[in-house]
Length: 256
Image (cartoon, rainbow, N blue to C red; front, side):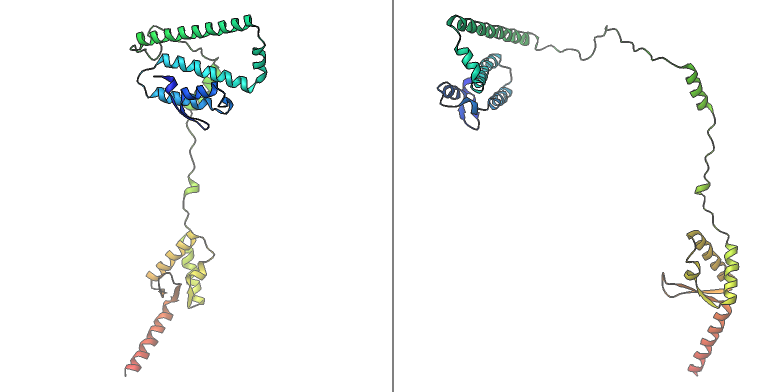
């Protein structure tokens, strides 16, 4: 992999990396406008496409990108460039020798890592502690025997009975509605069921309806409802018989 042939697509430049370096060195392109992070991203994407890690290309790229970073830092901080320009020839030579020594050490370290990768790349390491590693003992926190005994006594006690009285349905007795409707039919020959039980609860209305059915079964009243969900009209049975007889007599007269 040749780093200088790396294709770049940046905001201010598009082309090979080699051309970018030439433009920067000739000062035809302002390095402060170049996105160095984009160059690193492009190199990593190109590197990911290869099956093996090219340490030589990585080392060359690190040297070049480090040089670009240094040049950009000098452009952003001109005071540092002035200090380097003021160095004497001997001091400049020492600074150059120091940087070359650092680069040589980095290159040797990269070569050593490459050798280790080639020699030990096929080894697989055990994930987890070694078999003979002593197990770490977790010390117990201070215990309270009296508190533990009290907790065990609470667990051993019989639980209290849970009252379910609030869940029971208490229907009022049907007998009280039997007497109520009988007394009402004594005073009146006809009444509407909804009018009489409108202020009662649902349970009381259910008991009242059972009382109406019981009186209907005993033949004491008649139930009439014009349509489903229409008002229920209750009539005293004697009154209903009289009305039936009147309807029968009227029909007989008309027939004659």
